[in-house]
Length: 261
Ligand code: LHQ
Image 1 (cartoon, rainbow, N blue to C red):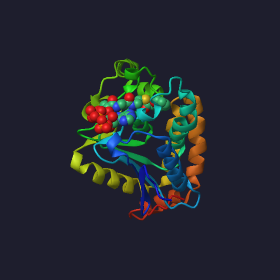
Image 2: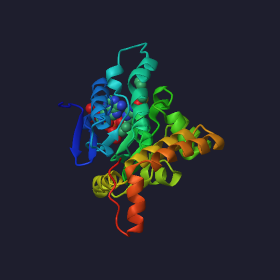
Image 3: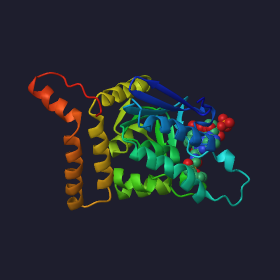
Image 4: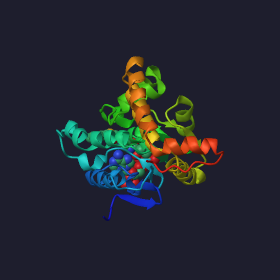
């Protein structure tokens, strides 16, 4: 498939999706949603050998959220429908994808673009990048998971101020507050994110998928339910080839070779 609004590249076990509408700071269009869904179809296909996904943006922005140009003139748009049909499936899909997702925020991440970065598993940002809950500025509510991610990541006080004031914060502050994992010098961002994705791809990726599931569930769970879920997931992890290999390698004092099986 040829893509117009994203670049989809597979190198060994790592797939990279680059949002590619740089003149609009990679703002989302319906076409971009369709293309993202198609790329994620191939990443998640049962016979896929891809074991990690990297997500980034082309040009000076990461993603400026919904393309506001495509909405102009429509006086009573059904934005709920847009969320239900385009954004929510994307966010759900990323959270449920049984692969580690590394996000490299190369520039501004605004509106649903910020939500997208928060939905990934490990998010790095260029030192010059920034995050903006742009929604309130245009009379909207944070969406695409931001009202969930923000309080979980930074606590209620900061979440409320970020969402209501719609002030841009820099990458360094985003890291200090726990919105993202690490800040990287601009010229090193893509290299570091690729190296991280490659490192994750060589890990026991079944276990990583179970970790992802456990941590996602924990956001709305109780200790009792988490203990049960951990037992269920550990039972599955314990039956993987990777577990056998991990233990064998430990006793043989060698580096394990994990296959994601
Ligand atoms: C854009 C955009 C953009 C079009 C920059 N659209 N062109 C979901 C469901 C349904 C509907 C509603 O929304 C949602 C979720 C959402 O995401 S709502 C939030 C939508 N996003 C925003 O409100 C952010 C709007 N953009 C901005 O505030 C600024 O552009 C930021 C702070 C991101 C960057 O500022 P600057 O670095 O100063 O760049 P710029 O403003 O000069 O933008 C560069 C170009 O990109 C410019 O085009 P031009 O032709 O003048 O060079 C902008 O018009 C275009 N652009 N964001 N969302």
